[in-house]
Image 1 (tube, rainbow, N blue to C red):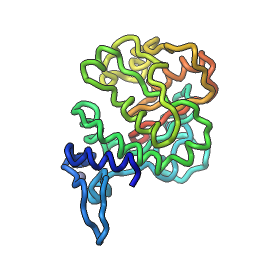
Image 2 (image 1 turned 90 degrees about the horizontal axis):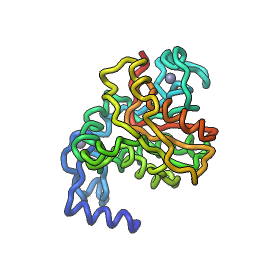
Image 3 (image 1 turned 30 degrees about the horizontal axis):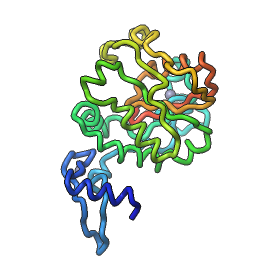
Amino acid sequence: MHEFDFLDTAISLVYPRHCPVCDGVLKTVEIKDGELITGRLIHDSCNRKVARIRGNTCAKCGKLLDRACQDDEYCNDCMKMRHLFDRGFAVFEYRSISGSIYRFKYMGRREYARFYAKEAKRLLGRKLSGLGIEAIIPVPMFRDKENKRGYNQAQVLAKSLSKELGIPMFSDVLVRNRNTLPMKQLDVRGRRNNLKKAFNIARNDVKFKCILIIDDIYTTGSTIDEIAHEFRVAGVKKIYFLSLAIGQTT
Ligand SMILES: [Zn+2]
Ligand SMILES: [Zn+2]
């Protein structure tokens, strides 16, 4: 057992982990098929309910394509709209994990990040390691909002990912300089206007050529586009993103 895993097991004896799907308490130690299992992050039966993004995906946003396609094919959404990022990757199909993300975001279940990050590495680790990513950057929250909630879920996820992928996280490079309206209420144009000049690069002392932006949910891509715009202006050449969940193409 690694030192980290041991510590984790010890902590979970006091504070049991919750399953990211059903939120039930996970056994810290159990015997299965004669083997001692520790550090379980999800129930086996719950694990089977989560749909991963596998197979043909859009070469731009990472959405699952419902048809056989070439390597460089775009989904309908990306064919209609030009994006400013290079390419995106997603881990889960949104509908199968939406309840989990809700608790992760609003109900303090930061511990789910470990499961999310491990799955991201398992599914995308090899692809990501070939890209030359120098920095992992979470989508920032407006400071007042983050203080109220107590944490920024994208940053919690980015931190776990940074550990899994062995790429440093920089959470102070990008800031959100005002509170934006909830995106759910807005159409594509409204989303773009809502986000104009919402982000700022706060540090000039770090220069990256290639970055990975982290967010929890990808919908229209307007948030990532706005961030990508700022980083392009700052001279970043390759801008990738990873979203925990992504919907289906419209
Ligand atoms: Zn469960
Ligand atoms: Zn796409």
